[in-house]
Image (cartoon, rainbow, N blue to C red; front, side, top):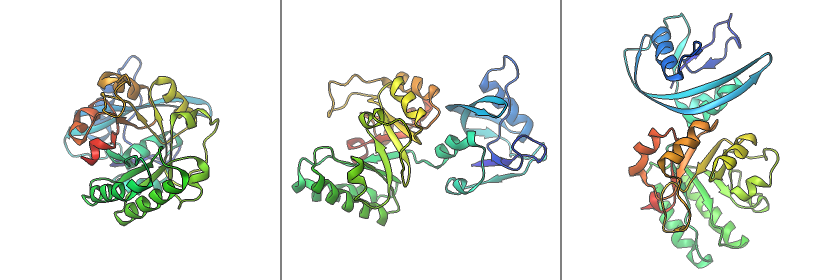
Length: 297
């Protein structure tokens, strides 16, 4: 990711940021993106997708960041305004000082494009098969984040399942989020937390979490509740019809895009999708694809 450091005479001096600038009066955000990157870096934007809309209050000023992912450009980026520039690996961004308003952008840069959700065994006797299935998938190396979830298991069977999945994830360098009641999570090793929409609605402040904090949402109201907590990212859907929830009304790609343009945090698409759908999902502004069967198969 290309980042630049703010000049000493600028607002928030010395902090790192993503290249950009202010919209002129009446100027569309995409046009401002193209103009600012031409002026600051000497590059011509060829492909860009808006991914986040971040309102933020600073003392004495209010801003809204229209955030774009630039996938293709022409020219070699150069510091035309004498600003320090550097390319940084996504994993290095968390250790650099950024303005508070850029927190969600750093999250989007660090998060992967695929979010695997564990199968839901019917009982404890099926745990071993599900663990083998997930472990084989993780061994392929393209999954970097796993949600441990099994709503049909009792506490004892779930904890056994979760321990085995977390061991497999650790062996493959995969980050874990646990989707379970807090009392169950406290009996597991430190991990991120994924909230169901029901658990999200029961909260009025951000809970403690040892990793990523995420939530499932199905509409704009749920998204707004998640952003207000705030969470680090959401999973939205179902986007397409699924065999597991055939009666759920899908939001489709237009509905996904409508949520993304209103979101101040990264959005994963869920429901009837697989890695083959990743390109069209990214074009809506979403972070990537989440799923069980679609990613396992």
